[in-house]
Length: 463
Image (cartoon, rainbow, N blue to C red):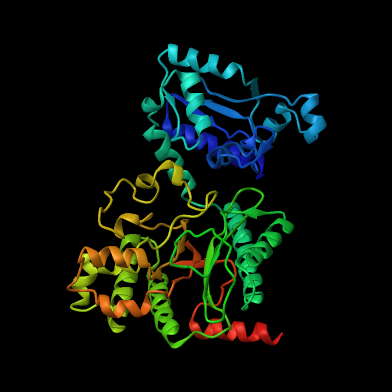
């Protein structure tokens, strides 16, 4: 964890931002996979980590702004737990590490909250994403799930702190991104016909675990890149397949990396693959060049989308006026997701707090297919960390649906599109820090252009 004063200062700043009431922090509990004693790998709630830094299950906390109290609630582990899991610091020792002087048993928290509510004090809590959190709010505050309305003031205060990465946070993200780049290079070395998706995935996972880290999300390593979040690893790799990797490491303190690569099996793109790949890279580089403080990320997305639209027209897949096709969202048949997302303690940073506050800063969201999937549109500021990841995909199910609906028939050449039906998908992803002059890539830069990828694969084959 960071130094004690980091957490003290964060909590003081949060108190000044919200100004009144009681802030309730719900830490995570262990969760059984198929029975209570067989648990998933524990991961603490990210906002709890940000303000309290303690990666232990079974903790909750309050910051009572009105009474100037900060309390961590939890229980000492029993001798039975020690026998099975080993010892831990005491609750007081844990709290001392992050500058909290007052601790109470978990059983005291409902009483504390009911007393606060009975005195008319406002109790702020954040959006829930686990069933255990919903049940706790029901028990502690007598709030049915339908009435568990999170505090907008609390959300906005947290977002307005976590969104700006400090120097010590950036070092953690840099470490995660460096490990992530190595994960990808390991995959490059073992990417050959006859290998399996599962084997390549296992090699990346082994490196992360051996590095004292964990995965920041389940690895995507697939010959079916047209499935955007494909976690199936049962295929055998064949020559001339396009192999899409989307993977990231997470540091011990919870900070994430996230990169994507698309590699031709055998080391060389076919002519058709290179044509599409070059368009994706052009969109990527256009987006990177546009990054900087004061720029709206939605405008960066539109630049990338326009490149893809024009590129699809050059391949004969889109016809008519490319500006009109771009405006109508025709490109979303090939690029149905956003351009990138915030990155930090979450791989999609603060997504549980609501994209309307994190990525949109309260701006309205588009309802148009493709544009409605943007996670980030707001004006960029120095200290933001985000990904750039435009993609091009040929999704048979989506193509068939639009063709049946005669959608955009004036713009889409459905007959020619059949040639690309089994093409798959392409995505490359990098992590950038917005600074005062533009943007700085985090982690080692992986091969990006077709020539760079082929040269890297040739070099690996010769080793």
